[in-house]
Image (cartoon, rainbow, N blue to C red; front, side, top):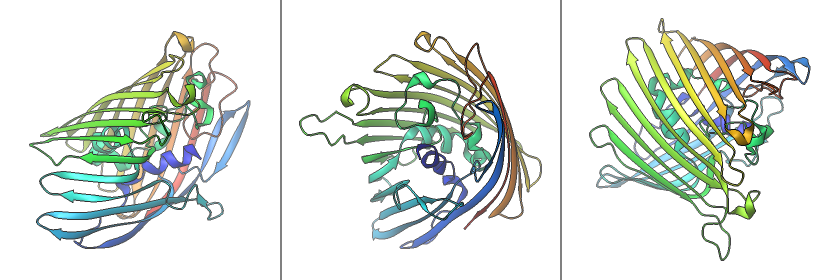
Length: 357
């Protein structure tokens, strides 16, 4: 479930924004496909409905003009399975909030909200290329010892770039000041007698100048499973992207630490998204992931190719190919593959169709 909730965040840039003041908009994505995995526990596997480009979701969002540049805003978004039509998690459990937006002062919202490791280091970082970034290219690898709670293998989306909501959170996002915007978020732990127990905090900064985007983000979330809520998973990251004609080139660095055990993984990533016609987009990505001494210095490299064809602004088909190789005795595990390889390498190939409304 943690895996499915996270990839829902990858779809934020694929659906249009509400376009009228004082409006309520229903929106969603319907997406399905088939994935081939070369080695899952020693055998190949064919998986239905992996949802790699984006999951199937449905939501409502809206605004109300209150005068003087002030608006009320809300969002209710949930995820559904294409296999059986059932809701995944709570009905609107992916992201739900309500708040106020002021043209000059910024936006203040309260609810179950995704943090800045996604909003700064994914959505803003990739910019116009974001809809063509496939979630299968994100994090997993041979890092079960990292011990991220509530994740497949203890390492799925360990740096939160695919996106995960922080419950009971208060979030502020500034307006744009000459290309610079900042944000901060705090999640209340809800533990009587201990304000910081099982709490979370996040911050992000975005700077745009010409064709260049620079981004930074920090998130620290404490979990009841780690030292009774007094320790957690700390993430920070930096990113840069540049538009070169029909292409977007991007670099990213993230660092993830389990503060209870000292286990840490650094990720170095580079990718290029190329629109070689209005309908065809190609993304090529490479990442190197490296664990510290606590993780026996395990490492993995991964290459991803994604090709997407758009029939229209709302309907597209796509395919992707991923190869991962782990070091030493590590077992490769590609993001969104159902399980790890029995050895050091794993290959995944996927085809799918997506419709946004």
